[in-house]
Length: 218
Ligand code: URA
Image (cartoon, rainbow, N blue to C red; front, side):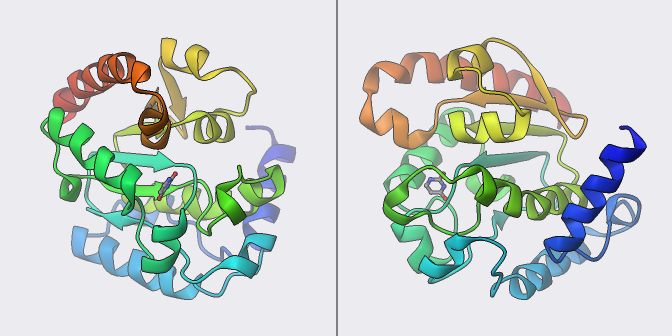
């Protein structure tokens, strides 16, 4: 990363309220320490006003799961149920996600699940670029703390936001990627699978490829 890019990144973190960089020190934290730190940060950011999504927030949906996980799953943003409950993927898409995970022998409790934006976009519209950028430091921080070994990116919005391009989902699914140096797989968003069952077969193929890599890392 160039010096200019690094300074821009640090400024973005500062403007977003991020005050610490955890990359080095996170390696020293026990799983209990990571869990406690994530809980403290979720509380600290619960009244975030860094973007317009704050206006419709009932709960900031920070993330949930195993702070010592191997795999982190990243969706797009909370929907209505998630906004009400404060946890990611608890509505219909979440129920399908649980089944998808079970099919590749992963329990929800094994992984950490979060989203690109932590507050619900009105009417479930796609989050704007401004909203995605405003929330990105929170995700970067979560990854620095948890240090997952593999990422499963769900849906086009999450893929384009993290991988910094405007390619199609098909393009993203065809190759391996990295985010923050971590191998990343891209698949369909569970909500998309609820809308179009023709995508279930290719999604199953993505999940099997993910499972193969995941199991090597255990
Ligand atoms: N869709 C998402 O992308 N995330 C959730 O948490 C729920 C639905």
